[in-house]
Length: 212
Ligand SMILES: N[C@@H](CCC(=O)N[C@@H](CS)C(=O)NCC(=O)O)C(=O)O
Image 1 (cartoon, rainbow, N blue to C red):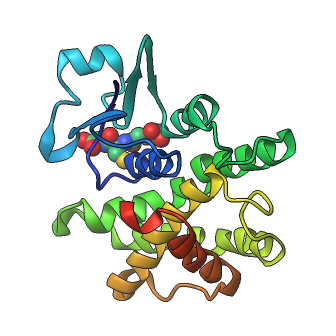
Image 2 (image 1 turned 90 degrees about the vertical axis):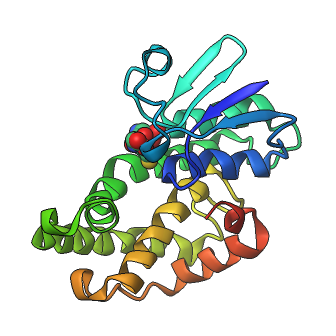
Image 3 (image 1 turned 135 degrees about the vertical axis):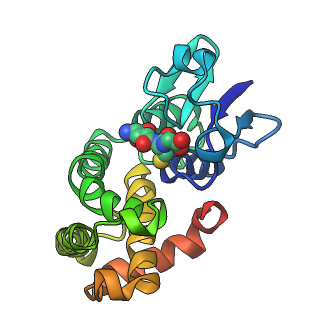
């Protein structure tokens, strides 16, 4: 049975769990999940570091294959298990999804992540509030690019739901949460109507709400 290491409150583990839901793969019968990371530990044991020398979650093992990097895991799961075409199979849609997945990993999340970690995982006396605000504001501005796309497209990569929606929606959920919970530290978030409509749609049309 496939194994997934990772705690359920990690954004990168949530990507995998959401995708598994969409593919109809069930915990217990199709895959086993092992709590790892933060308070659960495990990710720094010698056995785990053999699988993933980064000591990070998510990590999966499926037969002979050990895989880490959440976006790579998503691509693998779709290639291997999407028999029912839940996700687009044409090359153009896949390339567009890849583009947004790279944007999430290299452009958007590196800005939002320090604000998220600063406010949710860093003890109060160690928080750099000026940096947190600067990071949040940069991330907030970047979202106009996604909003513009969603004014034209139903989903990030076109007319169909794809893994790009998974990775971005989970980031957007954190962006909204930070603005709602810590307005005194991050200020107001910008109004992006197309993006908000898309997030709402994902809540009703997909398994999004099951993983957050
Ligand atoms: N680029 C990696 C990043 C993985 C990562 O940073 N994982 C975090 C959780 S989101 C982690 O393992 N942190 C250590 C811990 O939970 O103890 C990916 O996308 O999978």
